[in-house]
Length: 239
Image 1 (cartoon, one colour):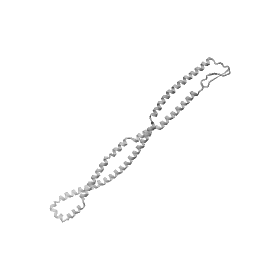
Image 2 (cartoon, rainbow, N blue to C red):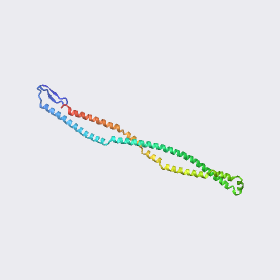
Image 3 (cartoon, helix red, strand yellow):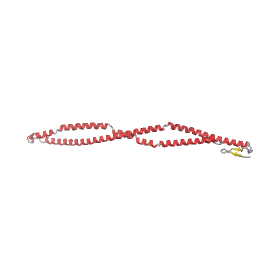
Image 4 (cartoon, one colour):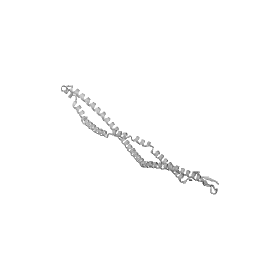
């Protein structure tokens, strides 16, 4: 007489032909072991089912996040913003060059106007001096000084027309500068800078979405392998 035991549950098995009896106690022991294993497996299956429900919900949440489409949108927005910032930088360079040119022109006109104003002050002082000369009594002397010819020379310098031209040019420059100031370039650039685009894009990049998605995919693969192993253990084990 002889017997063996099953590999997994150590169930009692008489060896065929050995005349080993199959006792009720052996049968009951086998059934107890099978029942205990069934209870354990049922508990583990319950836990797996609950875990599967939780995982399914979490996977639904991840899928509903539509991360790939959102990342594509962010990348598209980033490309658009980069293009717009490049255009702004180009426009800023152009405006800066034009403002520099205007400043140079303004400096030149300012210098020339200063000269005209100084000349006007000098002329006014000289006229005051002339008026104080008691011209009525001294005109005869002055007439001998060829003043008419000298005045004709001064008139030939076309000072009035030149001053009118300078005033017209100054008016034009003032209008153009007013238009430039109305562009409000400084405030508009400040508004763009206040949108903190670089920091916000850096924040998105710092969220490391690609690595986090890779981790989630790795966890999913690992869980799938573990579930496959459990299914193999449950369905393919020796009773």
